[in-house]
Length: 295
Length: 295
Image (cartoon, rainbow over all chains, first blue to last red; front, side):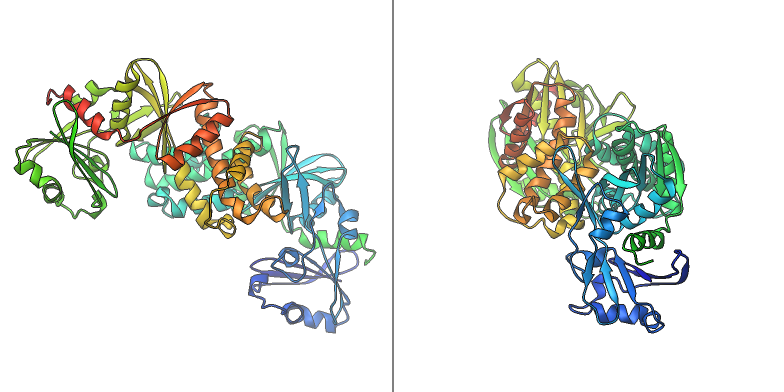
């Protein structure tokens, strides 16, 4: 079978053996935003045509390819959801070249009735849940839109999204903080000060102006403001997501640099961190395919 | 005497009688960012030359003209500060045409040792403190950088700044929320929903992504997202500044439209609001001039 993680800005494809071994992989630009209307069959053939010609007949897609801007919109599946529920909610896509199905995103509703959504991360969570077993776990997936997912009984019970990465970019480029948020090496001590500030009173909107005030009063160097702001935002996220729920351990799933920052912030809040290889999509697609009886 | 509020983007000048009556006023562009290096004496003469020629000999300046980007940098004065302390900290500026002095900004340090700063608002607060008397009061001045000031014994005891207006602009223009934050009439019901959301758990960074999720799940119309986001941010500010300190009444000082939104948010959090005319700079400059024995 073939698994494809087709996101906004890239396409990653995996040719998988029946036991889940990755036989071949492909990683290239050509995200869904580059595909013209009606162009998805051609774009897929362009990417994995040789594997199809070589006899592969089944393709499982996940990621933003299932969004409103993608090939076909796959409605969000309500949590709790594990590989069985996700497999049952996959959407068939008519395609001349192969049997193609689309993994749905997930949605959850908090106790205040407010929804949240994910698309793409559910596939990684399926793989991680298989690895972690049935005990409850809190997963942190840092990024532009960080996801915090609660696993229970091997399924995604609920989750929250935090707009931390995108807020960092907007504030450091398009506010008064841009004047001092110059690029440069990370400053771990300034990052730690930002995390510590997040634990104090006053609220995030006040803490943000404090970045400016600290600099004006000579208490924060220009070269430190970017790391301080990063620590402030990640600190607020971690406190809201992990320490408010009194969790003692978090499973961290992210790219090395960002994951290290989250580990530092979590540990400074008294939370134990276990880091995991984030390269989980192929494994998740294989588990869902197994629930589909494809392998 | 002449009072001048010289800010980043505008210049407002007042010709004042000895009792503080405004005899003439001038309001024009020509903020400090438009003044070339060394050009402040000429720019001042250009604005108030006729009044000087008519016999006025003293000019008191406040606002960003006293910042690092202004005419002369006036160091921030530490709180608590009232008209006497502020008058004593005014800076003389050498000028051929008149006796010119500059009102300093204020700084405060919170119990965690973090500073905050204001420049320009202190003059309005002097005027409001004279009007309110010596009883303690909490003042809210909404805007790009909202100020919340605690008055005690007729002086500014301490204050906090919240970057709410600027964060709103950056998020509604430069994040995924820009896709739905189209201009349009205010939606009071959506604003109220945003304020109510701010009172729930999860943290601001999570609530921000919720704007997107609510829209994706059909629970928030595109025409409502801008007002909802506004309510969310103002709600977080109001909760941090007013309700966390368990204040029962706030004195509100702002332009009509924005002040109405803050009044709505405060009242929905159980805080009583008294609104004041924000046109207070001339009165504040007159009170400071009296402490200088100018009038």
